[in-house]
Amino acid sequence: MANSSSITHFLLLPLPGTRQLQLLHFCLFLAIYLAALLGNGLIISTIAWDHHLHTPMYFFLLNLALLDLGSISTTVPKSMDNSLRDTRDISYAGCAAQVFFFLFFISAEFSLLTIMSYNRYVAICRPLHYETLLSNRVCLHIAAAAWASGVLNALLHTANTFSLPLCQGNALHQFFCEVPQILKLSCSTSYLRELSLVVASACLFFVCFVLIVVSYVQIFRAVLRIPSQQGCHKAFSTCLPHLAVVSLFLSTGSIAYLKPPSLSSPSLDLVVSVLYSVVPPALNPLIYSLRNQELKDALCKLIPSCFQKQ
Image (cartoon, rainbow, N blue to C red; front, side, top):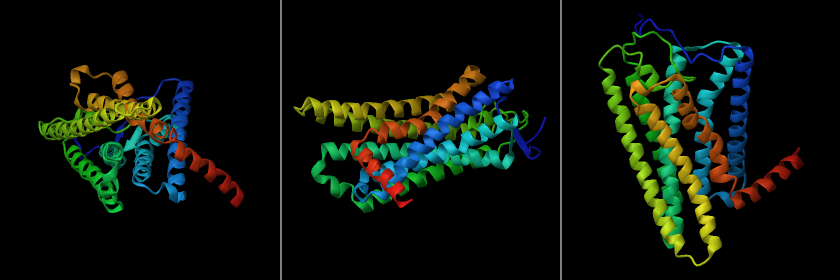
């Protein structure tokens, strides 16, 4: 039995036994990672380059793209590296850093998704007050608050988790360092302190989700009063995918962090973790941004200008 002071590294989820399956895992994660890098990178470059996109909506989209890049870069590259080198190791410090940065990015992202739903609500339901309610100063402050909330949440969970005595070995049944998996290694009742923090965070996320739903309900009510069927269809086709991604993010994250240990299994944990940690950063560029005609027009102008400079 090992305690936390003697643990120098953790062992992540064993990768598929044959070399061919390990390479398949590497190629699959590489394709998803490159798609996330390309999609989010194009969004960041386009919004930064085109001054016509320097509005609150695109400012929040740029922040979302940065958070998506950060969250997927925290987990996927290490898993791909382990697949190539046929190893399971991650250092104790590397595991702590992975927990901190992953929690930081996903916490800040959910706060930002709540802000973005409010932005849509103001734009559609209170357009005459838009510039007052969402001035440049206000946008900077609430975006900073979203990032700060992510730092605070990540600090609390990381400090509590890695202060626990660990005596159930060092094997984590996950492809990255995840708080619920580390709690399974604890041999002390003090893990209940971290569990209470997890429940408190889940409650805050649920409140954010309720605010998102309330915002979209108000948007739908306003849109249904629009006589144009094309306008209604456009609003619904934009808002419903957003709600679907947020619901996927929250439901799978809640299952990962709140399900009882008796329902845990390596295959279920793996599927759930991929759905809330890998899929949203790859899908968000398509759902939130690249379906936007104004952004696509700016992107079409950016790419030729880049080639002309070369």
